Length: 225
Image 1: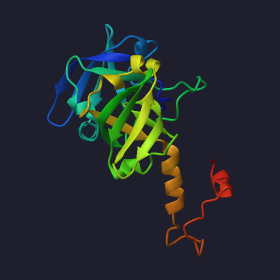
Image 2: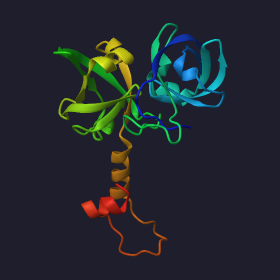
Image 3: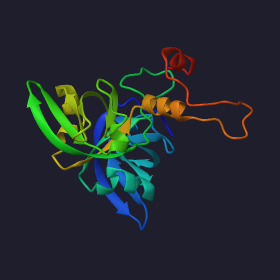
Image 4: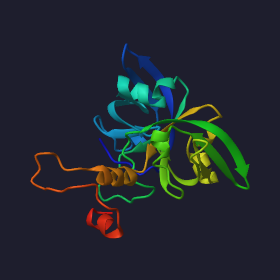
């Protein structure tokens, strides 16, 4: 599996979806992401890391497991659907956006789109399990696109992002309508902080008197943040 930046390289088009009993094979028409790509490479499709199984004539195929179909919006794709595409980041390459793993945390639903000057505010509804990691001015990946959180409404169960013209033109987000499902991946830093705060030594550990650590700037620095 690869690591991604959340900077979409191009929008591809679904050529076909061959559904099996528990999985599917998806074929996508693309151009830029096929440059230098080989069988076995990772490409994020709407933020979901998939492994290329074949490349031919401007098309690539990938297997989609049953669990991926259940946990993402990929199960709703059909011929003609537009998708966000990004190749896995190369070692030593330029880094933009934020760290995106390609393993989504779940899905959200587009609640509204409101134009404000040259930008568009997109509001997304999400479960508490996802919303708890959404931080004002923090990062979130929507269908694989790295975006900055512009507002959070915990009571209403929504968050909003402001989409600039470039992002609107280069990704599928503004093509979504109210009620459409989007893939969501939270910023990994929040998950690591939660893990560190909730971690307790196992009973057979040689360390005694362990407890939930107090979060301080020194604590974060010591743990690589």
